[in-house]
Image (cartoon, rainbow, N blue to C red; front, side, top):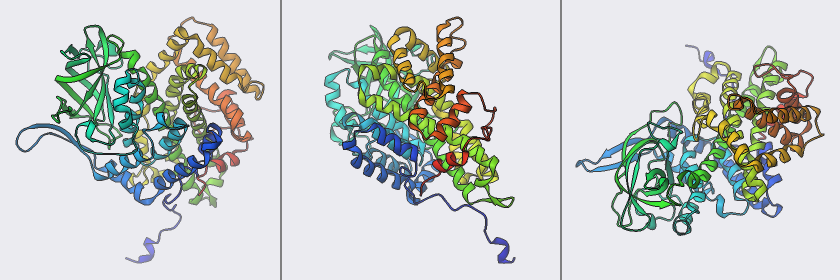
Length: 544
């Protein structure tokens, strides 16, 4: 066969060997906006290091290897002893180790830690999203443990360590540990008050014996877990270590690993407790209140994870269209393709800007900012995670048939894309949580309205959307049935207000015209043709 028939032309080169952080203008600007100027030089250096690593050929290959070699459950050793261990590909450990060393579990103990971590988490999740679960759980366990100062003093230094130590040993013998979480059960799902796992008090104060199951237990190879169980005083939060202080294995029977649509490099499990030793965290009967801050932190990570997936899908689409020629020119220069890419870019930048604003609220820690988080986190979690799948699908289509082939990486992003909308409470749970926040904590709505009000007068479409939102909020008739519509509108108004204040005029104008002004179709690529779409696409291009 003639060699000339295999000459490859008109194909985009791999998007590798670039700095994923500095290539993302919206993310860089958000970090610069929200961090103390005294921290910026150090933070830029750290984040650029994470970005160069994430964009390297080697680390990209680790992501592929971890995805293609999912974890395996080893319930027993060769002699029949129960060991309940999960075996991972070496690439998984390399990715997880780099994530820990990059500070993705250390936000609570670093100045500007949440903004720095949010940016790094967004960058690192673009390599392989599966290792984000243990990083997220470990990060989020800190505020729950702080309800018990003694437990926090013991565990927090290990949870926030920059050292990753694999293997099951007593936590006191490790420089760094990972945490998982077990809340849901077969019969209850999101309704955790229907849990049946029992906690029987032991002789030592604050210690219990657990019997029951968990239908979803995250990161079962971790060193400890926060779980919910029914104590004599009601639903309570407990710390369950995998290995006890004397070196013996705690009773933690992994029944099976979930066979999931995506997120395949990460182990999600079903576990049984039968005489499992546990330490109470917080007061009996206040388990939900104790663990709620952990849930809120992981919900923000769901927003960050979806932001990362959308960003990676977008840059792959733009990269392809930059190099691919069709019908006499580059795809990126074709008006209709430019409209599609600009539309996707708006979703990506709006998600990035909102996610980093919420991370900054964690760093601020004031009463006003905490009130904003109570409402804005579930609203953002509801909306941003729901936008992820259609964005990834449309971005894949920009690559044509190439985007449907595994080697492009787009199918892996697509399988991952629904996950963050489901984990930590699916859409209805988030919408109802927003309603609950408004009813029980009026300060949360006031904080939200003050935040969006900062952009009033800057764009007539945003002003109109705020006015319409206030009208909706004043009408309580059938509010639960229309909760999704209300929360969607709240998220869009919040994104619009942030873009009007912080994004280039071209981006804010396109967002307000389409998302708030109604000049938009029902599919991507239907932006008003009179907008400056070339500038929007250029801003979103990976700045290599």
